[in-house]
Image (cartoon, protein in one colour):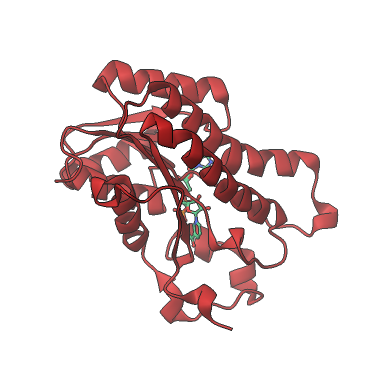
Length: 245
Ligand code: NAD
């Protein structure tokens, strides 16, 4: 029970990797705040987390790209649970378009959710977490290597890796650890809805497809005291896909 008496926020916690992470943290004792955009989906996810053993779950409707809504979600967490120990910045969006068809608004949307959302929660965590707090950012192997049509996503995730390094440096004197995971191909709707995967532009060997629980286990490790000396790391969870020439 590595998260007994602890309070964890998981953004994008109603589905996919976020839900698997919330269930894992909850099964190890964490009281949970699930951040997402739709109350009904958050309520369904909260039920699953309680069934997995979470002692308490609050579903907070919040657009992570909106600084005031993020501040309100963290305020609500502190009012309900009195503390904040773990933040998992998992909410993300991906957009598929040739570069010449992309607009500034497209980029602002993707960067708003994937990068600024992560920044807003780090800022709030730095303002409110006590020493011992941990932040795990969900990046992607697209931060390192990428495919056509997803320039804004690849740029956002590369920036999340950079933000993880900066935040780990500034978090260290506060006693706050900041790390990132870089999932490869993970069996969630985001993977199978991917037009590059559907069209075959991006080929994925079935042996290289992981489960949300694989990523959740790594996130739980990084968020736990087992990783007490892991700071500023970018941990690939891709079954070795990026190692292949
Ligand atoms: P998903 O679509 O199930 O999860 C994304 C979650 O983010 C959803 O719950 C969605 O509602 C939420 N979200 C989106 N915009 C939001 C906003 N503005 N405010 C609040 N919540 C918002 O897909 P997933 O695969 O579980 O993705 C989770 C994370 O993992 C993402 O950051 C994604 O980039 C990353 N990732 C996924 C894969 C993969 O193969 N599935 C690979 C690498 C990285």
